[in-house]
Image (cartoon, rainbow, N blue to C red):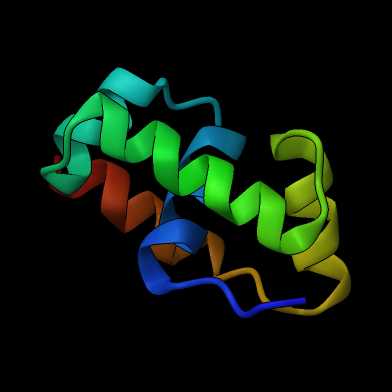
Length: 77
């Protein structure tokens, strides 16, 4: 299993918190297509079919960032 990039992890975590692709794009200064591409690459790297599976896999690996970090991403936008 390949390691996720920082952006791939951020995208998965934001989508997992219920943030839309459009909102995640605005928060991270990326296009919607870039968000969808990073999510897709993250799912593929993890062998996940969707965000829920990807989050579960990250949680098992203790690779999730703190909730405060994800909240900060949301607040900055």
